[in-house]
Length: 394
Image (cartoon, rainbow, N blue to C red; front, top):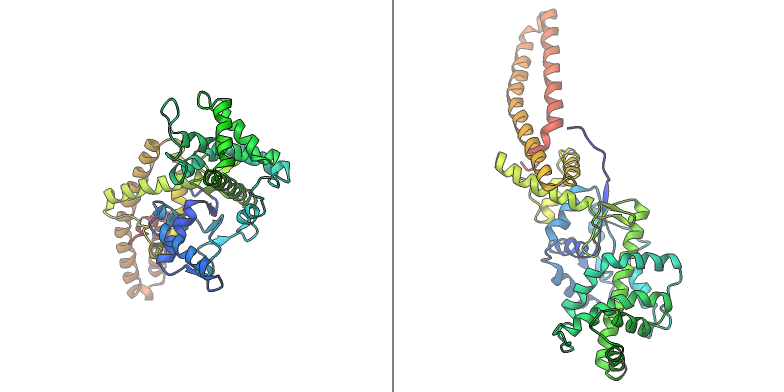
């Protein structure tokens, strides 16, 4: 297979960051910083405990195998990640690190100072909304508002509709600097759910019920926080010209004008198919379940070629899983056959070496024998360079 030059890095966003840090914490590569307060340390420890067994742990670790450089779009600032950075496992763009939190903390909770400073930033967030809305809705419905406010006339969950309105209003607020008008407009935009009278009743309840107001306001700020983090991550992706993997954003096309969110996921799909095919063909496959597995594979000199092959397969994934699976099975079968043939060539090379010793006194014959030995070894080296990646797990 002809080598394809691919991107040297990837950006991890959202839960992928959490999953990687959780795995690194379990391996002793991440600790809570000594420079933070007891309260911040407690918060960091709770965070690490919650992400230790993330569903994306394996996929996040695999990115350390697939790419030379893995950037974190954001991370908990109470954590000490120096060991991860010093060992070259992760990189952090310090310009953007923690910027989302600083941005949100600068906002007034009453919305009077919430208007975006630049039209460019606002336009990007408005463009982002369709891609981040499913994540925001799930966030709100999972952790708050759902089933808390009674039922509407059609027996649907009012909390669900309030969550949707909160999500939409958070972006509308960025243009005007006022949340309540945007929130009311969002309520009325849900057909058949809220009338002007019921929308006004929800608004009135916000003013009269402190608990309800604080809950809606909390999730309103959560939406702003997530939007700002997504914006910063895309800014990082653009600045570094790298793809990203994210559970926060999902683009159906491989490359949208906002960034490449598919390349990393295609690499994961290709790797899954590779594991399946290698297990069937030769009885073993690369395994990435811990940071120790990552370190072992990154030390293997065959990893670079394996990455090149994996990149070729990931390109096939764009044409469909069946197409990619057929290509991967064929390549693995061919590589295994070629490696089996090399055993005979190595035996031939050894015999040529043995014969050359007693024939050293015969110049012409010795020259022919030596040239044959060199040619044989060059052939072996070339084939190992092409197919040696098959032995990466041995």
